Amino acid sequence: MNWVWNRGVSVSDNQQTLVLGGGCFWCTEAVYVRVRGVLDVESGYSNGHVERPDYEQVCTGRTGHAEVVKLVYDPMQVSTRELLDIFFVIHDPITLNAQGNDRGTQYRSGIYFTTPEQQQVALALVQELDAHGAFARPIVTEIQPLANYWAAEDYHQDFFARNPYQGYCLAVAAPKVDKFRKTFARLVRD
Image (cartoon, rainbow, N blue to C red; front, side):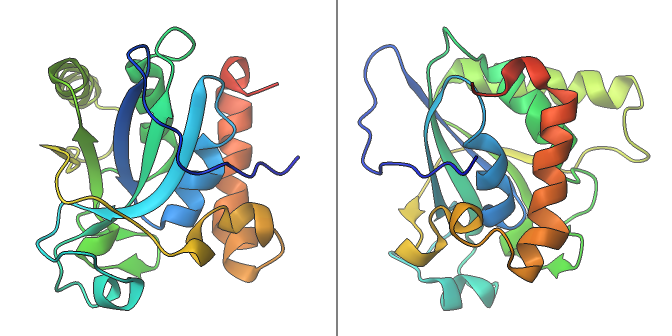
């Protein structure tokens, strides 16, 4: 089933926003649109120093922005911890500024929080994963407050849903979606 989102969901008091950088936003978005309790997913750019960057600018690595997905979610249906558990399964958090063949600071691993509680959950989870040796090396995911977020161009939104047979989607996004479905069956949207 393909999931296409209605942009512009406003965040109410019982919803939260969390922004994640896990490499190419097409892949990260493809997973999170399938998570129960996630109300909206938007591909974008964050935590850089350029106002209104476009894809070509971000790809140079000179804007400081990361490719990210902005999640609006209902914490009564899915917790911040569960969203981050998924995050650490579907991407490489131990390689600095790279995901697979995608290289550069725009592909860095990042958790960009909007509440102090999200920050605490992220820091505790990273400490827990490192203490248990979950990965071959220490986690390099940056954990920062969300700053300078901009939505990506329309053609990046719902990319996997609209282009499921595109080469990159078949090779990189589809396996991440499959891994999510197998590992987190209880969190897969009906």
